[in-house]
Length: 423
Ligand SMILES: *[C@@H]1O[C@H](CO)[C@@H](O)[C@H](O)[C@H]1NC(C)=O
Ligand SMILES: *[C@@H]1O[C@H](CO)[C@@H](O)[C@H](O)[C@H]1NC(C)=O
Image 1: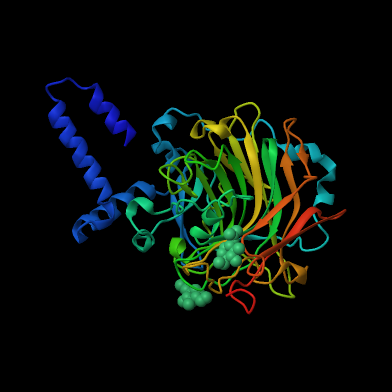
Image 2: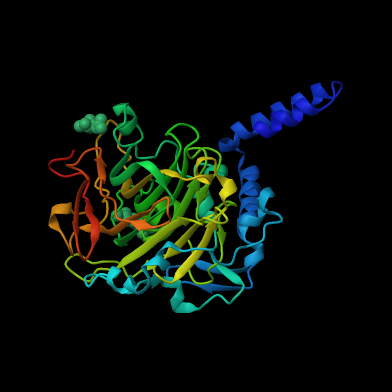
């Protein structure tokens, strides 16, 4: 919108009326985007799919019904961004805070729960060098969204805001959290190892996720956020599978940003991991536990924010210019779970967070984040001394922190939602 108004102002006086009308038309067609005629909508969807789905070098059918397109790395969605037209891809970061751990790396892996984890589509093939795997967006995916423009975007105001001055804000959106956080310093990254579950979602318009938030700025309209973890979201993916995801925004979930590669921004370099693809296997109650590690850090040389999955997969980076505050540093890091609760008036559905069990049940039953760390201003990974916690209603979803030699700083979190103590 801003850009449109600007170009109007630049034009000569005699064409102004026409241009103003054109701008009005632009405004109207935008605000009416949710109410297009069926044929217009079909066209919109087709155009959007064409933008998102780049011509693949080859395609792989995943057992879960996904199609993974191996797209040449230079044709990925990021390069639709006007600022990235001449961007030279960084194939690797200049620095990785984990390298400082060196030979200690093995001790970071826990004796408990460190089973290998992969993505389901790996069963049916690989993407070659020079390509990246992208989950193909289907027509049905876009049609489930409230509008073509909102597809792949989070609802506004979904950010967990600990110690909010405005308690109404918290309950208003239906988003429920159980999180741990650090604030009050400059942060240059975050890490955690998270065990993976497949929480039950009661209503298709709800979701359940477990993630790391790297936040910059105030909680106003200009909040910058980089997020990564796992999620179950029937609306976004059309099923109940647990999927690896990322998110970014530089304006509090309004105009900029999206999940995964559903808009231009993130530059992927890995040919092995597909964002939005199912993770397999997942942890079982009183059974094998599977966990994933997520590391996000700011490259001190180029300033880009990199992401690593597990110990081996460097996925790619968010270029620094996408952000305002995060172009410098993060002011807060959060780790934990979030669900959307579709019931009005603070009532709850039975949508689960994490394993769907409360933290006190412990290992093998409850969900956890372990080896929680942040990257400090000297680019060292550090375990937080002061870890705050936040939850809207602990009798629905709760969190308990702890620390020991094996897991460092950790917490158990989650819950069943609706239960005798949570209506
Ligand atoms: C949210 O609403 C519930 C139920 O009305 C209430 O018990 C709880 O205290 C509220 N939480 C906050 C942080 O205001
Ligand atoms: C997802 O799970 C819910 C119940 O938890 C079920 O009603 C729904 O049919 C499932 N959706 C799909 C696409 O399998």
